[in-house]
Structures are given as structure tokens and as C-alpha cells.
Image: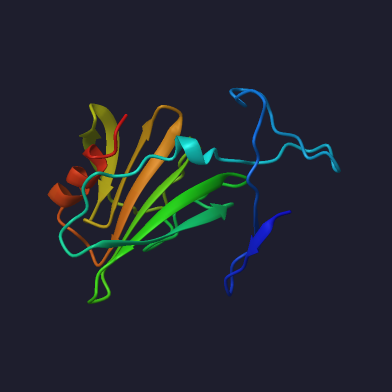
Length: 163
């Protein structure tokens, strides 16, 4: 039986815990009622950072669908993808979001200014101390901060996420 989570202004997510006889691997997950593929993200694949800046504490995991990370602003769009966002906060209302989702094409808005950097020797994109995103092992990782953090802090967080 699914556990449903609902937030104001956000769609409803059904969270299932399923034990498979064999790993899902590259097989498609199909809805037995509709016959349609089910977007999913294996929680065993979610990677956690070993570093967050002083004062930040883990608050909660947030499942998502249909959008590239929305915090602190939506820089790109994607559809029909699932994601997992780890939310970290401080006592003085500073926020850090680490989102993981299957790799999707990125469409940056007109006028978006970004800088090319590297994370684990992979190409990455950084913007105004608020966003750092890169692809790694079939996942798109995005670290966002509100208010902005120095790029060195975003890179330290990103590089602490193990391959």
C-alpha cells in the first residue's frame, strides 16, 4: 500500500517500498493496471554528501517529478522524470538542496549566465553561487543554495558526493 505525501501547490507522490527478486537493472518498471512505464529512482542509488558547510543540518528528503530542481529558482525544465532532493537548513533560514535525477537534456533560459567548472573531473555548470550541476554515472546532480554560497563551498559539497 502506498504512502501518499502531499504539499500545498505540489502534486501527490505515491511512495512504494518494493523488494524485487532480482535487481531492476536496465529493465523497465511497468504499471500493471495501465501498462505504462513508471518513472522511478532507486533509493539505493541515491548518494549522500560527506560534507556540508558548518551550521547546515539535514532536514528531509523530498521526492519529485516533472521538473529539474526548483530551488532556489527553476533554471531548466524536464518532464516525466523522478528526482530525490535532500534538504539541508540552518537555524537562521539558509537552505541547501542536493537533487539527483536521471540524466535529462538541459535547456537553460535565455540570458542565463553560467560558468564551466569540473566536479570529480566531469564537466559541470555553476551559476552565481546558487547552482552547480553535473552528470555522473547516469544521474544529474544539482546543488543549489539560498542565499548563495561561494563557488568553493558548492564544489566542496559536490566533490564530497562519492562516485
